[in-house]
Length: 325
Image (cartoon, one colour):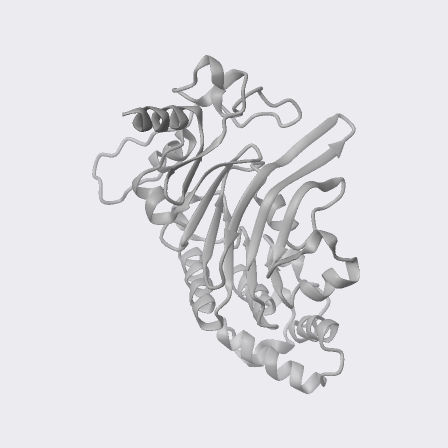
């Protein structure tokens, strides 16, 4: 249902041009869950916003295609896009407190949302649908007349999820849905999203900086670094056989409670300054396998095994050697 084809996104600042997303491609089927993982500044949230054409200024999609059910949304008018946002593709923002209007009751949020797409529906019917959506996410329907400040952080996040599913969209994008929540509430929110995906038959994109929380909850994973897709595979394959040095580093930094004496490995260095990124592979200053070629040329994306894509010269060399044998 979703096809991202060679999408490139730039932010044009006074100090220079920042390439936030660099030539990213992937597909997503209905009913699948995709995890977008990377450090802050890796471009994952910008990529998520591009799917509903909400990249904030001075950002712009400068290349590529974004197709939803075969329709390239980059060719649609703003009015046509408004009919897609919320109805076909819904977005759950990072901070529910700033996303909900503090002076409006919860029911008014649903009225505004549903009336935008279905102007003839009665307010009574809207509130009934809203109560069902709230009940589906574990919020008592009678609290529809409460204000956002009367709910805890986890409950506000559930309300955001209820708003996202109110129009039964084909795709829900959750941008850091567990930010500022404690570990137990995080797990409940993620389990709720997975349950709703199965109930409503929608596709789901989880955007996060924490690889550990999506490994068991996603069908496919994309690891991003400095705007580039560096690895793309099924979550099972990526967990068992990580190919890119950055992905390996992320996995080695996840604590395992079953190991009594585990030494956690940190990735050396810091993410690059995107105003002046390193030439060649952006990861080479932090990579223990970096060669001279990595410092001057951008590595290609290679398919190391069926459905497993890696952007790395080392993996390309390994594939070439195996073919010659």
